[in-house]
Image (cartoon, rainbow, N blue to C red; front, side, top):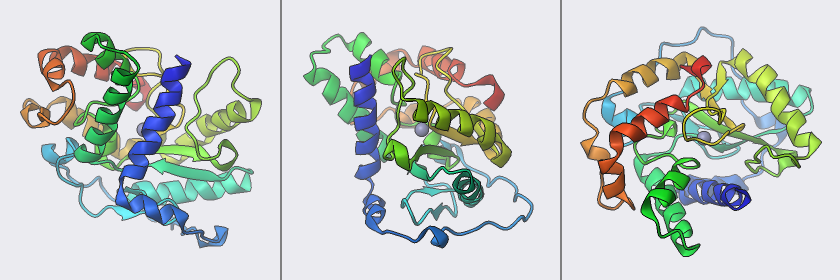
Length: 259
Ligand SMILES: [Zn+2]
């Protein structure tokens, strides 16, 4: 399990670094340079096509968090900035580790993870794919495609996505407890609790619920998933054969409070 967690951190950092915009991470901004949001009413959720929900096309009008270089829908980034301000007042320095990811970004993350498992001797396809699925979404099924999902870390966690284990440092647990108490005030819901379904507990993954609730309903009503079965996705044959079950497991993994 530890290896998997180590791998997850590696995989996600690889995923984030795979995007050209990651180079912006080196740009050091003064803390006061973080843009502030005004208290304007929340605009209605942008209408997304099925192709956008599947990551094949970009959602419209996304903006970038200049500090991290990651993108999301404008309301999501604005909510994050407000949240970051409160966090700062409470002594936490939030770091955005991932936002929007395209189908291609997710395919890179998936394939690298698959290669890593193979290199560690995971030759049984079923076991390998199930293990990857507990850590990495199948390309096309990642909620990060919607522009509503953020992976959030903190500077004392060195910007890493740290899992909760029996020996997890107190500081990390305190941070996650603070996040759970405060993120909902800004519209964020913790999606993966690791209690049901296949996906591991992800205390860093937050969904902007005012938008993602509707997108999730639309996503679950999609009938035609053929376009995500790309021959360049490792183990796509397994994914195709087991897709109905995979989709069910994916749905079951979601915190009912975010549904
Ligand atoms: Zn995530």
